[in-house]
Length: 239
Image 1 (tube, one colour):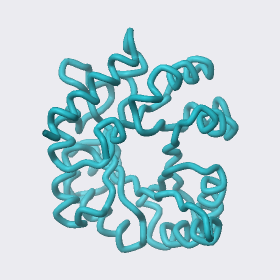
Image 2 (tube, rainbow, N blue to C red):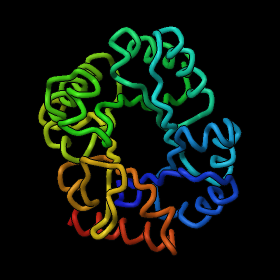
Image 3 (tube, one colour):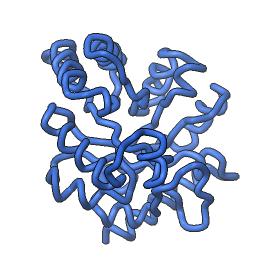
Image 4 (tube, one colour):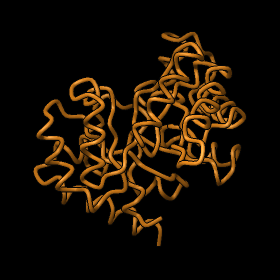
């Protein structure tokens, strides 16, 4: 992949026209757009088609987490939308993940199948929150690797994980297992509500496949230039 193909721009903005304007500005300097809960709930599934009509690829970030049948039916719906990737929460369990994988295979028989990613530990959670809020006594790194191996065993294409776990996932799951990384902040950018973060260059050097960047691009005075700067930083790291 070229460096720009690794960049996923998160369209987490409350106004539809603003989101479409961002697509127009940065569509040729990124590989994909992330439609998360905010834009999907605000603009509906038709918004996916609007991005497709403008030539954009979609990472549908809705984090399905439900009983196996319900999650599987949601996976079928995501596949019908023609998205490039979508995700489920690994915490939903093995049966849920396997059900989604099988349902999507059936739905897309003979057609392009979207990549299914497993969400590991959210980047807003750190070592303090896991035991206090979730009753998980592993460290974030240990929990991410545990869940990543489960996701791979259940047939998922990869995981969503923080930059801090990239190397460990690579070591345990191999090179062909996709890693998509949020919590990316260019040098000098604020951390916001993210705890386990990294720069674009460090993420690429660690072996990430895709980075997800939202606020540093969508809230920049010049979103296109902000995206180009991130792509340049990745290009220099790859050399």
